[in-house]
Length: 513
Image (cartoon, rainbow, N blue to C red):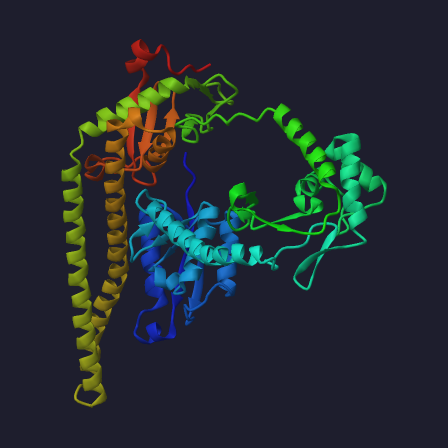
């Protein structure tokens, strides 16, 4: 049984909007109706009343919300529009990256963005592309100036390695550290092991510049650095991204600048030759096994099924239900094609558009009626203030109008939420149709990564039961919407595949012990 998704509601209404009557309560009710229709659970409400959207990252409610996302207390955030989350583009990109890193969803009702849906997940892709573009533009401008400064021998940032220090923008030998740097090479040449060299340095009482013990990785970095033999490298590395490790650029892009030497070129070359030969003898670890449907396979008992060792069989450890990887892959592909070939996608999308249009018309009618009634109330109030309407007569006319306005105020956010759900579902369905056509038309020629991407877009779960396989797709066919029983929280399609159909083809695909 799927666990109910816990989400938060984000309410930020500026002072100007409150004056215009765009109340926080209306935004909250609209979000709650949307969440109710999605069969999720409201775990938290974050309110930033009368707060400007110029910068919200430092607000206490923002910090509380981000802490709840990181801890998993909530796995999604619903808000009326992107501008209500943040008007600052930089902060919006930061929010998207933080949510994506925590595998949490952003749901913007006005822009019909729900990253828990297939179409909505494209938002994360676009946001990531925008952030990457911004980072690359900045990095490109910085990178363009670095080689020029490096060739001129100027300081371009970073600490000097052990044995050196920066002095007047020049790299000079540090007389107190240089003997230790030279000893690193001498000990390695003696022991020919990085860990043994580090241990020897520590036992002799030497420490790194930061006062830490030497490690094998520290020794490796010092041995590989050619500055010790009089050849300083500049602009030779780049980062993989914020918070990630640095990697070496191709040697053709390195800038090499002469500097004072601590050891002879012969000693440096001999130590590095030993490390090169040792590296050749090591076997690189093979790639991890990745299967097309891994992460989506569930047993009827509720436990996930995994492929252990090299058996190529999905197994439930609790009840020993199992099915071969090749069998379930073929079942998935074959029945997905057969199932979708019988669906008229154009008719479904046309029907969805018609229903959405009708709901929007109804919303327009209700909104106009509400505005008309509000105008009548204002007229009555003015007549009463001018003394042209008796108190009893005023109450007689005012109360029915106020009651009707209250009814419409309850109906409006419900209609808006239903339109939000239908709009996002429609967009998601269109995405799923396109992906599934590609799935069975071009499947044989697709690389594994593309196949996996499509499976992640259209699949919710695959449950292996005793007598059937249940495949849940992120798509709601018309038959289920017209009186059919809903099968999942996300109104997905459910294919019930009796295992008896496969007995002759796959020879007992599922075995329950």
